[in-house]
Length: 66
Image 1 (cartoon, rainbow, N blue to C red):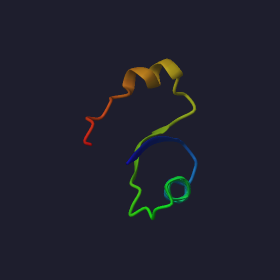
Image 2 (cartoon, rainbow, N blue to C red; image 1 turned 45 degrees about the horizontal axis):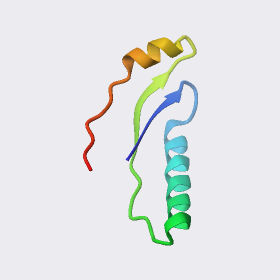
Image 3 (cartoon, rainbow, N blue to C red; image 1 turned 45 degrees about the vertical axis):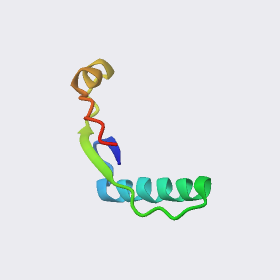
């Protein structure tokens, strides 16, 4: 599972798909195995007004499930 925060104004579905296929291809290349699935979770959309410090304060570390 990959969690991302994307910038306002980009195509969310297209970008998530590109991340998904890129990760799948790289993992397949590194391991020589087929990848069953790659989950991309869009946690939020960052606007231009967001500051780096604000982003750090708003990030909540998800519980590790592995």
